[in-house]
Image (cartoon, helix red, strand yellow):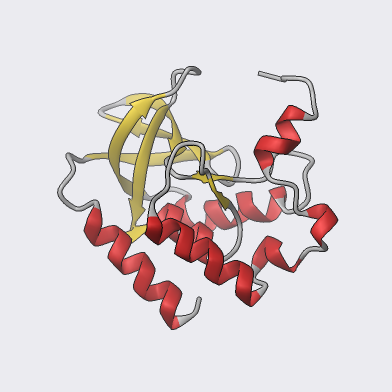
Length: 159
């Protein structure tokens, strides 16, 4: 991660520090932007706010999932809820070891900013930095860098 990216991760973490928090222990990572956690003894499906990871079968999906597993597996994390999505998942800002998880996934080039739901300048700057440096999925040939929302639109729903 570049110095600029590290600074942006820190700024983003500070920006959301005033929101109410929950804590939970990660029990399973599903993909590069979602996982299951135990919050107050209940298993909860969580979608990380502000990012969209490559879908299963899409280039870079396994690497994005592994990166999230390395960041979260078995850890107690902090959630700042944003909403509940149509699938019943908690959509939240997530911190692990004091680091904004969405920010770290973006800085390392594993995910896109989910611009349908956020125009957060820090998140966009992290994506731009990773893209400019050719980190992560940004090192793939352009034809393989299909945003997940386009990938899903081209394929039938599997939920």
